[in-house]
Amino acid sequence: MKFWKSKKMAMALALALVCSSSLLALAAPGEKTEVTADTFDYDSATGMVLAKGGVKVVRGQQTMTGQTVEYNSKTQDAHVSGGNGVQVTGPDLNMTSVELWSVGGKQLIAQGNVVAVKGDKRLIGPRVEYFQESEIAITPQGGTIFMTDGNMTADHIQAFLKEDRAIGTGNVHIVSEARKLDATSDLATYYGEKSGQDRSKIIMIGNARAVQDGNVLVGNTLNLYLDDKAMEGTGRARLVITNPNPTTGVPQNKPAEEVQDNKDN
Image (cartoon, rainbow, N blue to C red; front, top):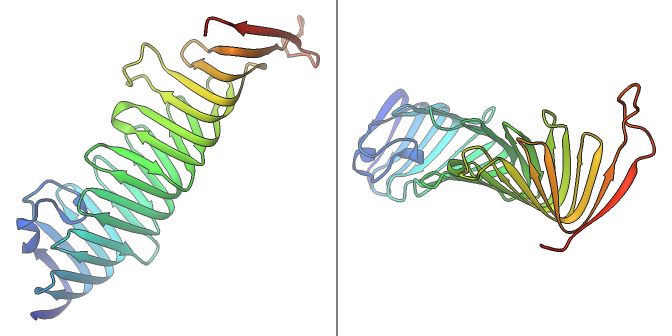
């Protein structure tokens, strides 16, 4: 077994040059990985690297910081933890958490007070799993995704970031202050401007309820068109229209109620 220790130095890991992807999969193949830390333990026989104290990992345009890094050069699995948390910064993805795992150089798993930012999307939750090739992020323990149109909170979120689409499952709550919208349901699918749909919309299924400009629409399935500030109920839906005060424009306490039955759906 070949084993050595080094203190207060930067190590350019030659082992990363022959890997199919980088340390923590933070850059393209073939680039040099540089790890800076207070102490190093490296076992060349097993390929295990243990770096402690003010750890900084730089590869390409990506930088990761933490207190402790354990990296297996043979499996490309890594675990980063310690200190005031872990931070990953770069042009594509920024993330902070208490701990971070990299699985096979293809998946990042962040645990503990996670905040992940990619483009105009931001995900927060106790755990975020990010698949780098497909650009899909999952919050398996619940969380919130913030988008340009508002935010969605659910027990489980699957965000297709490349497709500008997100699915919330369980206790879904959507809020858009800009569009004066507050909606809840069992399941919701959000389609943004870049999703390929004809317009931005949210499809809400199961115990769906949406309030917009004081008007309430309730049904099993609701279609909310964000650009038009329009709501549509399919199946049997109930619409409660709040009549504004003709003088002040403020909704009155006694709303008018209408029942809609869209039998063509």
